[in-house]
Amino acid sequence: MLGIRPERFTILSKDDLETPGLELVVDAVEDTGAVVCLHTTAKVGQEATPIIVRTPGRQTCGKGEQLRVTVRPDDIHLFSAKTQLRLDTGERSA
Image (spheres, rainbow, N blue to C red):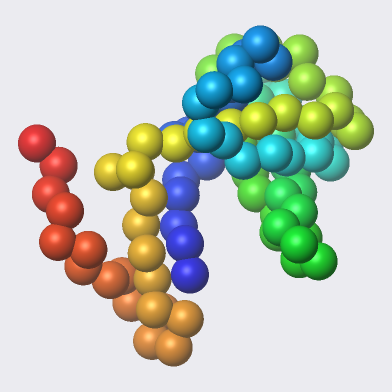
């Protein structure tokens, strides 16, 4: 299993086609004023996975829109599907 905190995603510019990213479809927008939570779906093959992306301030994405996000590798956490415990990848942040 993979764990990424919603605030760790970076929304890529529509013009940025070189940065590796995950394509998402916005299902709902939750605007609390200080932050916006984008409730999205990522489709990989036949699987659809819900993903929440949290951004500061106002967001211009609306329901049904597509966007691409990326995340720094050191912000990704791996968990055992069997034990639900975090896996040690041996990488340490500087």
